[in-house]
Amino acid sequence: MQAATELGTILKQLLSSDLELEAPAVAGALTVFPIMGSPAKLDVVAFADAVEEGASAKELPGGASVNDLLIHNPTARYLLLVDGEEVLGAQQNRVFDGTHLVAPGESRTVAVCCVEQGRWDGRRRRESFTASRQVADPSLRRDMCLDRSRSVDHRTVQTMVWARVAETVHFSGVASHTTALNDVYVQRDETLEETCAQIPLRPGQLGMLVFLGGRFAALDWVGHPDAFERLHPRLLRGYALKALDRPAPKRRPGKRKAQQLLDQLVVAPVRAVGDVGRAQNLAVGTPDTEDAFTGTGLAVDGELLHVSVFPG
Image 1 (spheres, rainbow, N blue to C red):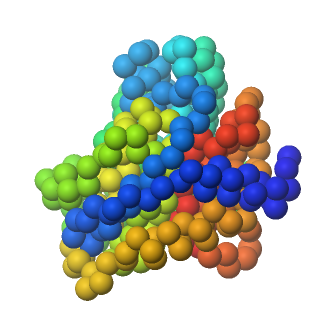
Image 2: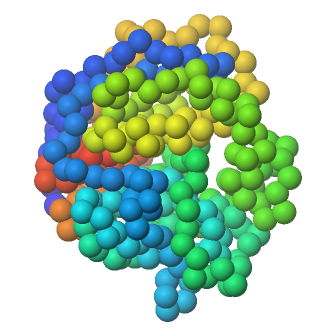
């Protein structure tokens, strides 16, 4: 594996070579700068598209596991599963724990976290999961990144996720007898969609730099325009959930401030935390330190395919 300094250099080169911030879209407490750039060479498909082509996510055939799912990719493209992306159904709803790349024709187990503590329905164990309409909110994804950075096996502690989901359900004021994160999105759908409609996808867009109430909340980047197009509305719903009931900031960040922040992000410390096939998993930030940023990413053949960064 490459040293943190070398990986940091790669991250800087990949993200800053021709990266361009466009004028922001605003919606309530959110300020979102579209990020443009050159796409990665690898042809990938997002989960929502792959399931329409026969891909599946299922419980393990030898016995369901809260923190593992079996992914089958019969398509001719690499399947990209993004950290925090939610899937619904089977014995309980899950989110992907880390970003995973599943090769064409491959079936393999990937790490997940449960986001529906009150249901474990064995009658549905043979079901295929469906793609949800959202990626988890940036606060939950941030906490998952921090948790993994302190873990020997680079997995998130399930009890932390349950606690965060329970807090979200409680403070959102929704009814959910299974404490399901998806119930919050379903019951606040109209408000969320009103917010998301004000933040359109730009042609060729590959990422977003997001401020909530004037403060940095997330950077999300996917190096393939088709995959990002599929993930764009799902990521927005996660941002919008954190913006619910918050007032618009008195002063929004301008492009100069956003660019300064981006310049800091691309030199954040990065570590390799495992290789699977052609993919190299990356962790932004250093364990047991107070880094300014934390996050996760995936590089393939020396190219950055995905990265999400949050306040540390």
